[in-house]
Length: 264
Image (cartoon, rainbow, N blue to C red):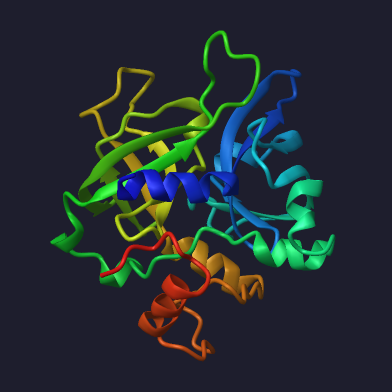
């Protein structure tokens, strides 16, 4: 099993399909992913302005039985395409059994995808051409159920857009449309690079350049701080109250909690 297969095998339970309904009664799909303690992340455009938002998982996965959405958080700047969903996760008897049927301990054991440390001021050319993994729930013709799809790619550039929010976007060599929006992009170290936003298209034309855009993790980390959301098992490099340095936390996670992380 190679590194990206290992990441997928361990992280796939954390990725769920988002289904929403518009004012005409039509349904649309996207993707969300768990970051810890019942909080999920998706793209803002996947959920904002829609009703009957529902989170589903792939049949046959062992942990999640159902998910109730309690609250939704958006950045004040409407151009920032990220959202956080606060939820109650109901686990399967199989997963609960590992934790003495304690829902609290089962949630603690349901780790979130760990944040990376590549905030905007740390972006450089050092990570160009490094490998990434995207997971999401595109519509699949002739499929009668949600199906998680994993795509491997590489980082080809990092830039700030000429319109919208002043945050970095990473260009990756993955053309992924539709339901991938809001999906996690995991880097070569098994941590979150950012949130999948869109393929490069203009005015409904074919994909430009064959790339897709990934919003950096910084606006997500700031959104957590702005709403006083502290995830004890995940590390927010923008939070000045952290008791550990990021490298110390990362080393601890590799050996204790996040066993899929590769050795340096």
